[in-house]
Length: 263
Length: 214
Image (cartoon, rainbow over all chains, first blue to last red; front, side):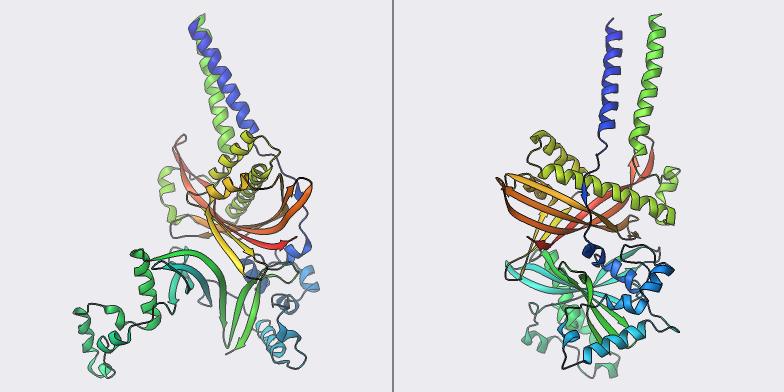
């Protein structure tokens, strides 16, 4: 009798569990129709690259012949430039407008159209980072670059740190250095590093800053609080463009070209 | 007779258990390593276009599940038990240590950035100082392509847009539209029941940017 009760209990509990699992399917929520400006907005940097490369349309779908006939690449590229840049509307100076037109013509050149390759060495990101350094709030710029590994995986790596916080001590520079003529003697002076108590002074400014930053993190004298802003620089042959996020609710918003410069 | 009854009960139980397990696991991503030995060679697994489509669909489902939980947690007219359950279930969608970074535009144009652990963000959402809260999402979910990380996991990001309205009594006192960038991580996890590894979608850190204030 006891065994049959146990069986019944098990059946009930399993049936109940089965029913609960059925109920765990989350019902769909009522969603609002997305306003047009959010489709047009460049929501991610990857989306910026896909649009720049004329790969996807405003909805993220692959560009069709129909779309291409309505929006040729040069017109589509123009939408990726910050339209609220006063240099575009300045009636007294057309320099930037001309630069933009020349750049678009360079990218859409029929014989040699150009694209952005995230892992091709063209892209750098600069993050403005809020930190706490020895108890005080401060900001530093961290340059990040994409790094592709042999197993076809990828990552971002720190390429350098820029900050006035880590200014080097002038007296120490006078003491710790490799003499200017050392290259003539095959840098024999590098042996000085064997005895150096602070080898950081032998490094170039950006590398020394990076080392101080990394050591500060290791010793807990520096802590990262938040990331204030990110900008991307993209290099083409003879050109450099800057891409920033324009956080506004208009058709021309999101990740856009904030500057085009001829090198 | 009684033993025959027990025997048939045992068979029913086994069928039910297998049924439950199949129902539960069929909701997970369908890419399954054919054996645990094969699954160990994570570095050699590369995603095909069809895998990417499956992952995009699974990511969309996870994001929508998160959106549903957010709506429930914020709804003050829902029973506390249901809101607590939604909070608990929402946390299960995330990688441990996930954070929410919010940036708010101040009247002077400056931006205030605040980072909170996901647990704190969700708990705070439950106790906002309004008598009623309405959270709605736009139907757009933008998911970027998937890239393999050095750890063998696949990484992507999803963008969703949320409309938040806070009421005190009948008065609308706060309304904003925020864009949420959600990190997506696809991990190969051990399925102890079937002794094999399966790909699962997890949510990671979220960057919330206020785009419009009413």
